Amino acid sequence: MTIIETDIDGRGAATVWLNRPEVHNAFDDTLIATLTGELRRVEADEKVRVVVLAGRGKSFSAGADLGWMKRMAGYTEAENRRDAEALAELLRTLNFLGKPTIAAVQGNAYGGGVGLVACCDIAVAVEAASFALTEVRLGLTPATISPYVVAAIGERQARRYFLTAEAFNAHEAQRIGLVHQTCKPDELPLIVAQIIDSLVACGPAAQAAAKDLVRRVARAPVDAGMIADTARRIAEIRVSPEGREGIAAFLEKRKATWR
Image (cartoon, rainbow, N blue to C red; front, top):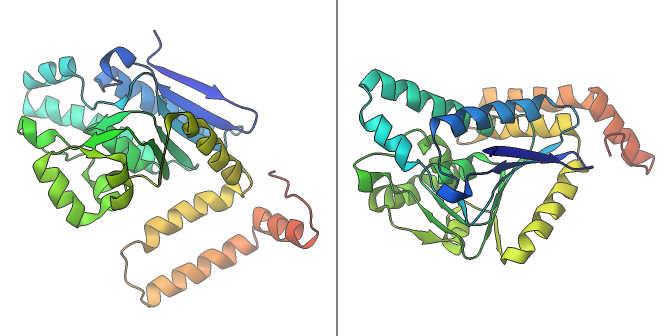
């Protein structure tokens, strides 16, 4: 069985499926390496405009695989560090992907699964989905996923859910900022399709630049450096081929070439 499967539709939306339903799409070293490689492949594919991360079966992802955890318990600190660095690289790859990403959360997400959701630009979850950052129950911490989860839900919420490991539902996940929207299971494909339609109508280079812009301005002071940098960014993109085409298409009342 292929543990990662990818479908690419006519709009250029690549759905990357976590395909270990028998273990609730839990991570192990093989899945981590395979998913990292697949994300890099679709990022490099010029036909791909949007990447959707989805899970087969009942769960989106249960986090760490029990068998993998048993093996890690016998690792040295150096071996554990190499193992953790591989997961950290997967998260970094997903978070900094140069194309828009959507988490289509059809079931529960725990531990590292919450990290995957937090790394995506947009997240939609079914109302029945449950979320938990369970690491402290095992005497561990959610270290590798923490930069992305804290960025999504904020320090105050992280201090609760990192420390209690309590489960929370999809509505709470939306309230605290982990997901953008909740829905019924049969609505999830339609909502994701609508988001994809919105994304592919926009300039791909502009979207990559906008993602980088968010990272630059988030939680940074509005000082002279910030003002100069944002002015430079808009000036550069206005004179770029995509910027010129977008403005021309708007003025001429036609579709831009990327559409």
